[in-house]
Length: 110
View 1 (spheres, rainbow, N blue to C red):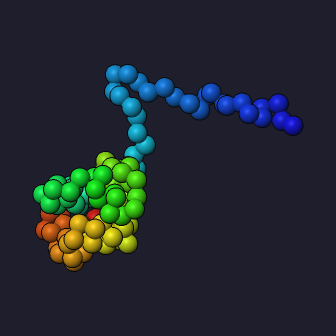
View 2 (view 1 turned 45 degrees about the vertical axis):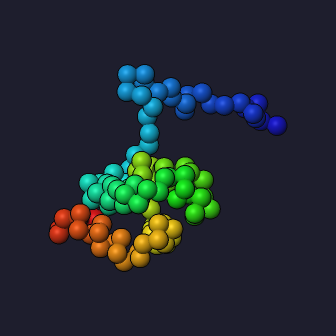
């Protein structure tokens, strides 16, 4: 048996800097201005319809953290999830996509 079995390597654990709050792992593709605009429109639509994160998650049979992480840009939304979310909000996915597209610049960059 390894002498390190069951022990943690404390060098990899970093305490958050209290001056800046909890540090989150962010990736450039998640926090691009265009992706942020798309998620902001998704959140705006949800709140305009009076649907809470908890209620939307319930409709999707997901934990509330699923919606929260998407809206906080901690989790990337894929196309199948987008369609399911639109349907759970009782909106045609193509209508929601058109509303999001209006918020995006003409020259999207990947």
